[in-house]
Length: 246
Ligand code: 13P
Image (cartoon, rainbow, N blue to C red; front, side, top):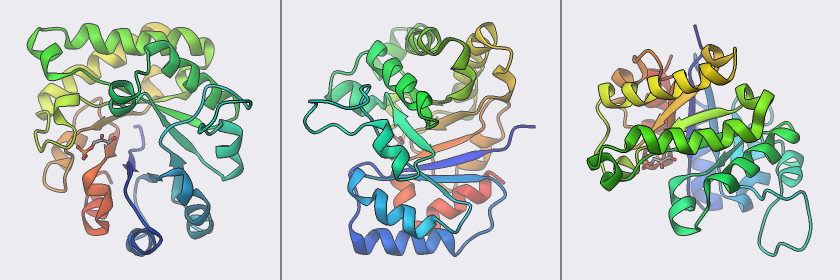
């Protein structure tokens, strides 16, 4: 059986004070019967690393450059993230695809850069409402994942995949467990065709996961945990979601 993983994506939220309270609330609730991580804004990586260093909680970033170093003003490289002890980096979040024009291939290149330095990419895929209504959900997520599978080649099994329907992010409109499982099954099948390790891979669901819907989502056969936005900013909610994954 796959061990569940719950990852908090803080997005562009936080302050020294708020982070300290949030992390204290999460660390104080240990131990967890699942793997738990927080992906924080870059400026807070240092303090997060210090706070979580003596715990089994993991941390990561929300994006990275596809380049190792160079004249890329404003970007942050994977070697830098690795220096801060990042275990994970989210790549291809729909907010980056939509607001920063990130292509499937750029997302794949970022995932490759992460793995090259031993940082696990959490690769996000997901359809918009218009795509779902046009019956394109399967085609869209397969296209997004396909670019990453081809670029990572024999390392594909080392990524984490997160299915996040764009229409469910921050809207309170969660995918039903059946809708989410159906897409996860499609992704698992695609991964099976690419790697013999597909059944050991972690597939997360994200999009309006809350304490009251987490358990039924996590009970689905191919849902191995969650990528949590809004509810990851409140310790009691995040901890409750982690408990639902135990
Ligand atoms: P919400 O949980 O706020 O819907 O955000 C989900 C998400 O985008 C996590 O990456």
